[in-house]
Length: 359
Image (cartoon, rainbow, N blue to C red; front, side):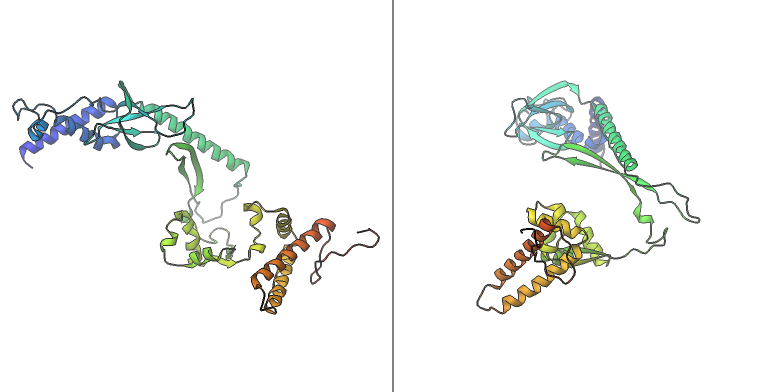
């Protein structure tokens, strides 16, 4: 690098430093400031050229500086989102980052959404720099509130109890995990703080000596089971969030056993879906003491329905099996809801009228 290049770089750095100090910009804006400094130096006179700017010497025309504003000032950009309400804001405050190359538009930065924008519908307040200290104070307060909410939740739920520390053991440390939730526009709508244990320092059975049993995960979706057991990350799994690949790793390491369960026997449906009344009552009974008996009851009816369907080759086997299973579920549910009787193992689930009741 020659003497001329070094002096020019010194001029660019001096201009960049002055602009950042004047507008109190954070260091992460240094690239934008350097870009704007070079933009200005190319459009102002220099001793190397007589009565010309570098831009004029290159393009044979004088530069247009009508759209130039003070770098880092507050700019209000027009909101172009459709279906705004009558009392909604029509503009949003941003930071001016210079002129977009090749157009008359302005480069803007939204500190709230942490995104850059390009717009021509902008109103400037050049005497008003952005107050970064206020943003830091507001952000710190929100993080403190999120931490207080997490601590209150831990105390209310009695997450831990004080006990005597085992000898010759090291304590497992804790750490805070901070996350933000954003809306469709990229704005932060919620601050989350979680106090978690450092799981990478603990081993199975290290403190209690208790050996963890393998967990059985029952799934009613055959495609999901095939996707979990597939060791290759093919195209179908690219749209799945990265945190759900944790199940795949547990299956590969034999920590979780995945089994298929029929839709009629999936007890989790009562907690995740809006079920019809009969099926809701059935699932509720399955979660109680009759769950195992009801599961055997449906398996027995399913076996009988399959045998009956294969004995009629001229009929729709799938339709016959579905109708038989619907009748089995309806009969069982009606029996429970009408009489409240308890079924005995091996007995049919048909409700018989009581003598003298008129039923």
